[in-house]
Length: 288
Image (cartoon, rainbow, N blue to C red; front, side, top):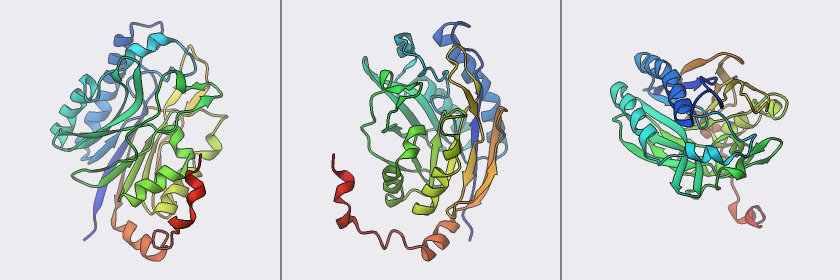
């Protein structure tokens, strides 16, 4: 019997930005802008919904202003708890990426996973932190220290990568080996830098590891940072590397797709990449 999944991705432009309110007001405006889309997903019967990278704030990393440290919060904490109410209301797994404060001075780019009953399952902390070309993330985020967990939700086993992680195949493989059936990658990436990679790397991860991926990007230009335009184009890709549904480049959008997890077994029965691995020959990959 097919294992059909209905999943959704939300790509969103800013509601308010720096200079248009306090940090708390900016966060609240962004959460309020998301709520109708979250409700729409629930009403459509979406089973797993993923939001974009640090979804409740601007992508403030083109600057190096320590005032944005105040945007960080506990995980689980107030935003995750608010989203848990929607997860429970609609029996919908939710992936909620937020700016996390573990304690003062220990800040992470994090995604929380909420199960369909509203319970908190755990979190992933972004492991690979860029510091180049206007993406000054090391000023804001400590590298993740929770490895590459796979979360057994009501509907599927899911793994997480966040934005810059997608340039590294090692973690993507670790998620596959740990049993991930769907890997979600909430991102913030602009035209003119890595756009040519957007439809290359994640389909390659899906093929190499035999799983589905849901890939999310923001939309619009975010003032006052002038980093560039976030080009949306969120999509789902299957284990054969085929992008089977994609969002627009410039519109706020809930992208919904249905797919059959049984394809994973079909593909892995043909391409025996896990069987034919030679881990004893890969020592150089973990050398400093």
